[in-house]
Amino acid sequence: IEDLYYAYGFLLRDASRLDEAETALKEALNLNPVSTKIILELCDIYKMRTPTFNKFYFYNMDALKYAYSGYELARIYKNFGFYYYEEGNIELTISCYKYSLKYENDPFTKEKVNLIESNKKIILSDEECEEYMKSKHIQCGASPFIVENLEKLAIEYENDNLFDQSLYFYRLFYSIKK
Image 1 (cartoon, helix red, strand yellow):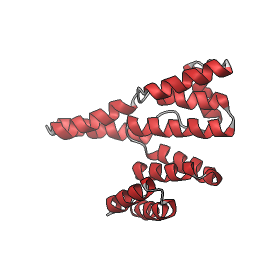
Image 2: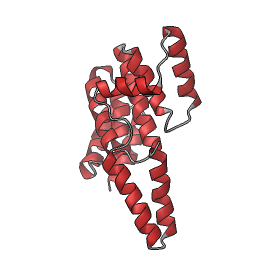
Image 3: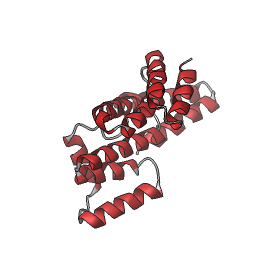
Image 4: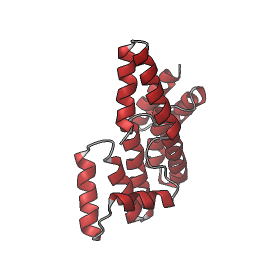
């Protein structure tokens, strides 16, 4: 049933009916409090409302705890990049956007990073990016619990000759293990 509330909230958000969308998505989140897709839709609402940037940040941090696909991780790090750009922290902006590229080869994000780096004359190595992120307690990569269990499920299904299920979990595992 949380999928119905999620879909309804998503459609309301697209129709710019943000208060109603937030209500529907919060109901979906009550039903499934670890759903990254629901949390990220709430983040999109809070991103559109400048005074609620704190909610945007904290929901994004929650999504990072539960993310189990490369797509979700990329979206979360791009959200952090946006947040820190709005906060005026260019080093963290670059760090988060660059880190998102580990999980999604997005030409728009690459162009954004190149533009910011050239305009601000700041070039950061991958190690420097991770250090900046860690300084703000931003987890680099998926939760070890998620990584460990995706691999465990993939192996268990493979051992049981359930190859479709195994492949599903291996794909998730390799999308976040970068």
